[in-house]
Length: 413
Image 1 (spheres, rainbow, N blue to C red):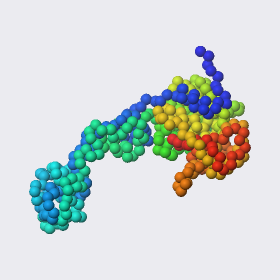
Image 2 (spheres, one colour):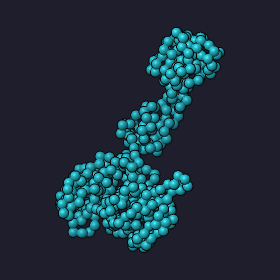
Image 3 (tube, rainbow, N blue to C red):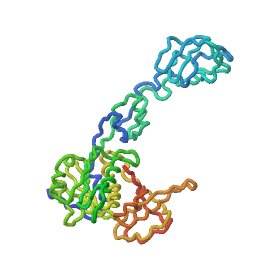
């Protein structure tokens, strides 16, 4: 079989289609609750028993069989949550009861302690109390066998607590891909270092790390995230690529070296490691020198080194692949919105994905989109507050305020 040549200047939509064809959802897995936060439930979960499993007091107060009012009742004992009363109160009797405690018999009501007048071993009830008042009935939340969480539910803290309440301590959830990420370049120094002439701090490592941890919306995009830095040494980089954890990662990210210069070795070492390069360049701005490769079920992305290119390519394509691996339904979220202010000096022969921020007017209930001031693909500060990308068609010189634009919202995870 003849190996296909990589696509050059592929449209973003073409890369999406390629990822749809080549990237399959990972098999779901059972996880303990402590590790399931930020994942998506892959089965419906039913109540293992009635919820609550018994009639229980909703208040601190006194339990009795309501009769007439006013009336006096003799307090025959106390029952706290987790205890079982020796017997149910009979006519003219009451039990001191606390919130969550089981009611020992049918037909009981609970009078709030604030309403009871205590006289020695008696309480006086001055109003008519109905049976079942201040009582949480057995099965009032759910009956045994009722679905308490549907499949495809996002597992946030409340959902995890609900799973715990029905004993579902190892739910079936979406798998999380393992990601290994390398930044490259002799000019890159750690963020804590003082750069010398010609050097820059490693902001891309921090950017990718935080995005992979799902800091924006709580969804967990990746696990076992490994990051390291490679210098301009193709042989050394190839050796690291062949070693763990890069050798077995579900997704490999290499920042920098994706172009065609003398020191841009990302494509060469990926091919040398057995990756089929399916995409060599993408027709977009910023981020054109992007590489996409496959080796079996592994996916590799060679990301252009500038931070805005990183940001755009991550959200458009890397996050798309990560969401496919996790079996999520929404892969792209887009909407046509009006510009809140003009977009000037945006002409380019390629489609531009302009950093932007959506704005919602609570008075008019209208959402608009505000383009952020962006100079070039290294202008990291232009991304502050970015929540969306405006798709600017090629050769568009400017767009006045009020223009309708195609907007892609950033999932962030």
